[in-house]
Image (cartoon, rainbow, N blue to C red):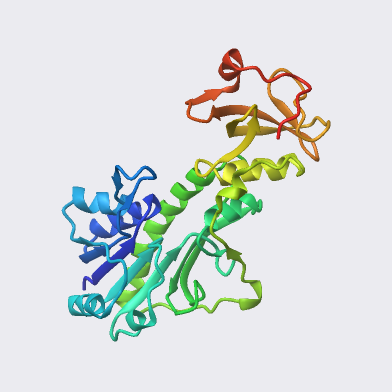
Length: 305
């Protein structure tokens, strides 16, 4: 028997999951996503990736700012069997979760209870975790703490960054979502409680974290570059301009922290050094280091801030 579903999600991570549901035998009743936002200059209105997918595929979509009494009644009257949440960006109020005869599940991009919260992919890379994964859990009022139905791991490879892990987890999330719906449909699933003693929290990424601190090991700095790529990125300052490091590798060289060690953009860290492979000057396009150095001078012996 096909299930009646509501989907709630916002960023690109959620789109493949929504697409897998839309292409399944289940009935997608409605989609919820975050309201559109104006650009920093206020001229352009930016719709979420989920919103754009819905418009393109003629799927009914709502963007409520809050779940007031009217919105809760609307959701209730749709009579869904399951509400699926994937990076929605809003915490569902207790009044929604208390609706009877509806199961609420969340597709979370970490191996819960590690990295509950807003930025699990970034934090897993920055903290140099060896693996991450998808957890599909029952939603409870406390953030990301509900018992999970399914959980599956993937390895974080040396060259993975936020985008590559996001895409891998999105595909995995799509597969596990359909598997979860099949389990719910058959009634053959179990709920596994999380171990609260192992819980960690992935706080939201703040822009101030983007500025490079050379007083860390090269391994730590590479992890940060990868975890914050492409947004908000990691940058250093030189002659009043910001330069974002897009890609770098670890090099077994040493020197004073923040000092350029050679003519091919190798910079000393607290332990070892990094060699920049791709770089972007503020307001300019991304360049390979060789092309960048052909038009901009960074001299051996200079100290970067």
